[in-house]
Length: 255
Image (cartoon, rainbow, N blue to C red; front, side, top):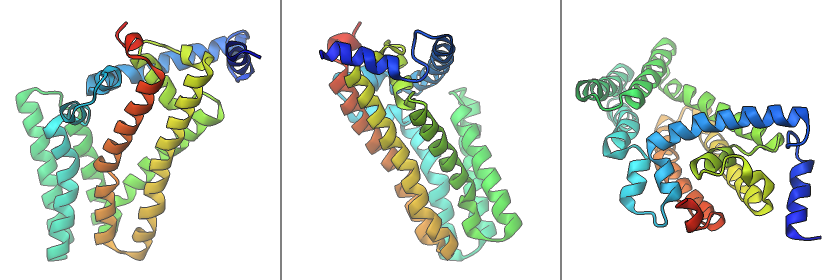
């Protein structure tokens, strides 16, 4: 059996594939979701690095939100950890973290430079601080992050189970491929593999950090939260770029 025929059969065998009323509806839903997510990813700079033939440090920093975006993502958590470690004062640590998030948001609003990320970060920091103050436990400052990672993991797992790998949906629209990647066995398997890798990141965060939470080890919890945040995310972006470039030739990306 030829590769093309095998790929066609693989696509027909997939739930929701074209050729049935249910498949058409699933295709439309996935396509609309893909367009929306890809549009958001495009604004963040992910679309550009996905299509670039080379990946420079500047491109990667841009995809992570730029220097300011990195500071907004890292510093509030770092400040909380440092202040609490040296003072053991929960109020001071939460106040410093929340105050820094407020400053970042105010700067975004003042400069009118896409405040969405800073506002989302402020809401997250404020909600975590409120929970921690309510319980009086420093480790509860990280609880909302557990639920966020669990929600991402469940969403990605569901996408794998229904054979619409989430990473494939996003990459397909970023590369101008739509949902056509599902009809090519090599691309489908690559996107399935990448989706499993991203699932692994969210699961790994929970497996490593939750035991520290129950042990009440705030320092280890905070440190692993920082290390498995932006740095791990950046590594997965680079790895994903390598896989995408392998299955999408440069001439196709330039079309």
